[in-house]
Length: 305
Image (cartoon, rainbow, N blue to C red):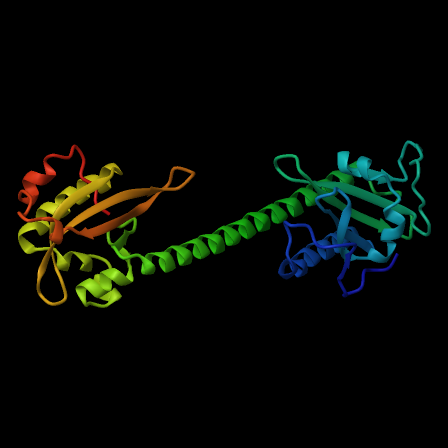
C-alpha cells in the first residue's frame, strides 16, 4: 500500500450535480483526502450522482481506479455499506477487481432519503483486519460528508433565492419608476425603504431624505398624527390601509392625496412590509373631503403603505 498523492483529482463524466458547484470541489476534495488518511488507503473518492442517477462526478484521490470500482453493482452500494472481499466469501456478481485487493463503499444519502452517490475506498493490498466496525465508521464519515453536501445545497439554494429576489426587486423598481403615480415601500421596521421617481419629483427631495421616517415630512402637519396612528394600527394588524389627506408638493402647494396600501405577504406566510400607491385627487375634489380623523373612522382598519 502507498499513501495517496497530494493531488486531488476531479473527474467528470458530464456536468456536476446541481447540489455542488465548481467553487466547492476543493472542499469536497479535502474531505475525501481526510478519509484516505484515516484509513491509510491510496484510493478514496466520492462518486456523485446526476439527475439520471448515474455517476457524473468523482472527487478525491485514486480516481484512476474508477473504471474498476464502477463495475461494482451501484444499486448494492447505494442500499447499504459494502465490504469486498466479503468475509463470508460471497462473490459480487459483475465486479471485476483488477489490481485491487480491497474495497469498501458507503452510500451518500440525504436526510430525506435522496441518493446522492457513494463514498468509496480501495487498496492494492489485502486488508484482512478491516472489520465491520471499520465499515460502520466509513458509513458515519459518509453521513458527515452528506450533511456537508446538504448544507452546501441549502446555502446554494439560499444564494439562488436571494439573487432571484434581487432580480425581482430590480424589476419592480424599474416598473415603479415608470408609473405615473407615487409609490412608497415600507420595510419590517415600519420605515420607508423605497420611493419611486414620481414621489421624488413630487416632493423635490432626495431618495435618502424620504427613507426611514422621512416620507412623513410631506404630510400636512394637521393630519400627520392621525394618518400615522391609522397606519400603525394597520401595520400591526397586517391589514389594508386607505386614507385621504393633503401632502406638500415641492413648490409648497398642498395637494389632496389618496393613499392605498397593501401588506406584502410571501408564499410562506412571511410578512415583509407594505407597498402603497398615492394618487392626486385634487382636480377631482371641488370640496375637500371630511377631516382626516373622521374620514379614517369610516374604515374598520386603516391601511397605508
